[in-house]
Amino acid sequence: MKLGILSTSPRCYSTRRMIDAAKARGHKPMVINTLKCSIDLQSGKPDLYYKGKPIGAYDAVIPRIGASITYFGTAVVRQLEQMNVFVANSSGGIANSRDKLRSMQILSRHHVGMPRTTFVRDKVDVLPAIERIGGAPVIIKLLEGTQGVGVILADTIKIAEAIIETLQTAKQNVLVQGFVAESKGRDIRAFVVGDHVIGAMRRVARGDEFRSNVHRGGQVEKVELDDKYRETAIRAAQIMGLRVAGVDLLEGKDGPQIMEVNSSPGLEGIEAATQRDIAGAIIDYCAAHTDFPEMDVRQRLTVSKGYTVSELVIPEGSQFVGMTIAEAAFSDRDINILTLYRGKTVIPNPKSSRTLEASDRLLCFGKQENMKSMVPTKARKKRTPELQQLKAEMVEHATAQPIYQ
Image 1: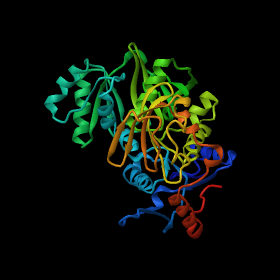
Image 2: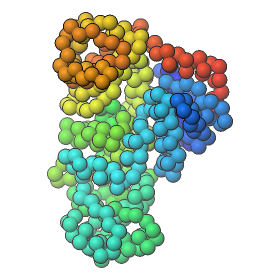
Image 3: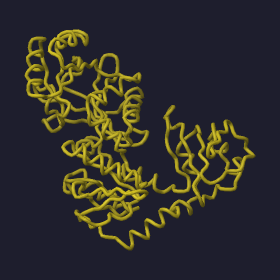
Image 4: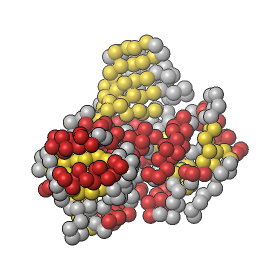
């Protein structure tokens, strides 16, 4: 697998670990400085240039987009999506998680635990809003803050009012959240890859500091999550549209409370606390997706552990073209085809005798791993004609050079 890592910090711990993990698995990792990319747009041919030359073909790209370059970084990721490159986190998911207000708005539509939150602009609305979320103490957050910067604990309503007024005068947008007293000075970071939590740690603040971020001196310890915390973390990542995420949870009296969903979570703290190969799990996840080109599995909804509602797309040249549904052995693998979409035709509950055609889309319920396992080992590395053409272009125009060795 030719793997791109979008990063402006090639020598930071997280980037180096993913490079090492990829090389250890026989892949070819390349660091791509996000800010040195150029986006070319023309009819029918979206393209991306790196350092002034065509970027070439990649099997997968892992975005590491810093907060300071969110707009341009998500534009680069979006361009890769238009070029049909698998990206570990989508541009939409990154944008959703980076905006604290947007992420809380999205989460609020779902039945997941979260602190009561308010957002106001008019001074006269501040006091009523604070009362609605339970009164002081409250947490005041800058929408653009990261690593605990721009997070303030206000013990009284008067202090909260003064802080909010000062920040708004400085043209800063702020969120106000109810204070979860029982979790003061500690939280949980759950690291989600796909539909699994592959590691979790508890972060504990030092002294009287209420922010537990590692960058603010917080100590970390490994923690084993129960089902409720695991499922909340996975749901939060999926609601945001992220495949790889660090989900920060408060331990409230009513269960897990989602504090934030991070689309570019650091690896150093979580790997040190858990002693697990988190970087390797991310690489393996990307490899699993690029190893199954004959059947494009697009996840729609996670229903329960390991079971999803997904759309399977049968491309030209697939071994399944010409087979009946029965011959493709869906039922033997505990996969139920709910609907078959063929052009403008919608066929609910298709019969097992129906023959599959190229470009058929199958809405299925079952284990996603079983859906992937239907591709024979010898076929997993095959590429569609479009991808073969991209590979030929890569050979002809290969110019991208690794930054980190």
